[in-house]
Image (cartoon, rainbow, N blue to C red; front, side, top):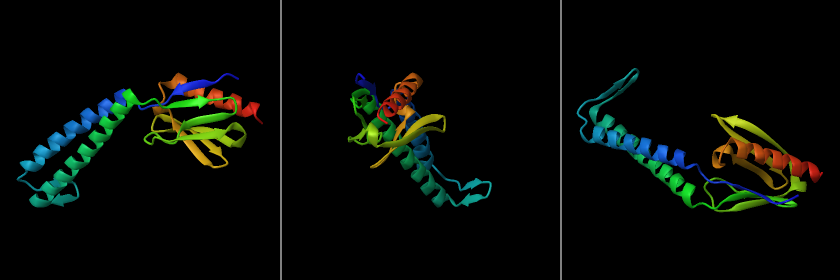
Length: 161
């Protein structure tokens, strides 16, 4: 079989959406914290003014962190050169979405694999002698790429059994 390479990097639109949405949340919550003069009352939650202000600051800080993660994903979507490589006898894939390392697994070492859907994102789970590998569909260019990934894996594992 011929080698097949599938790009594997974060989707740019997801990074942009997270950066913009949570950046806006951080600004709104930060302004709310800076100008807060009232207690926070919501159903069963009652916080005095000082604690409400602290809660707004904590939420603003969390929003900043998520916005920075979104910015990181956006940049990685442009500069990442990660790929899933189906070679003659091995599969090489990124260890996870954020690390720089790769995992190489011989097809003969693969015990099994299955797909599952988590919050509308398909994930391919591969069990092998050294552990497991999860490849989320969100790291691939689209649904066709995920389907090709599963088909290639199925064909190559079957050929090596």
